[in-house]
Amino acid sequence: MTKADLIEKMSQDAGITTAAAATALNTFMDGVGKALKKKEGEFSLIGFGTFYKTVRKARKGRNPRTGAAIKIKKGNVIKFRAGKKLKDAV
Image (cartoon, rainbow, N blue to C red; front, side, top):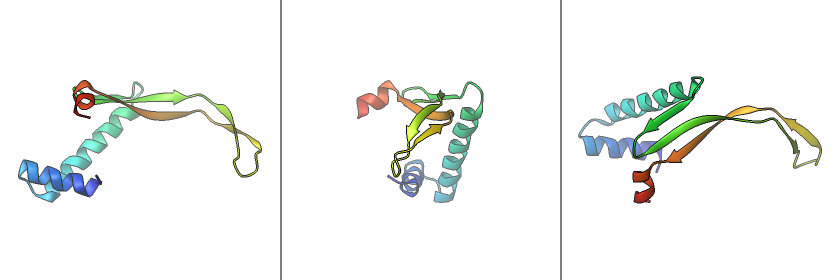
C-alpha cells in the first residue's frame, strides 16, 4: 500500500475529502517525526505499536566495491515494535 492508497482508504472510511485525509496523514507523520527528534525519542499507539529511537554505535565496515576497511560513524536509528492487536491481526 502506498501513501496515496492510504489517503484514499482514509477518505472513504471517514467520509471526508481526499485533501482532508492527506492533511490528517501528513499531520500524523509530522507528529511522529517531532516526537522522535526529542531526546527520549518514542511514539506509542496502544494496540498498534511503538516507534522508538536508538543509537547505533560506531563500527568498522568494508567498502563492497574495493574491500577497503572504512569507519562507520555512530547514528540514530528508528525502530518499530508492533503492538498486540497488530500482531494478532497479522
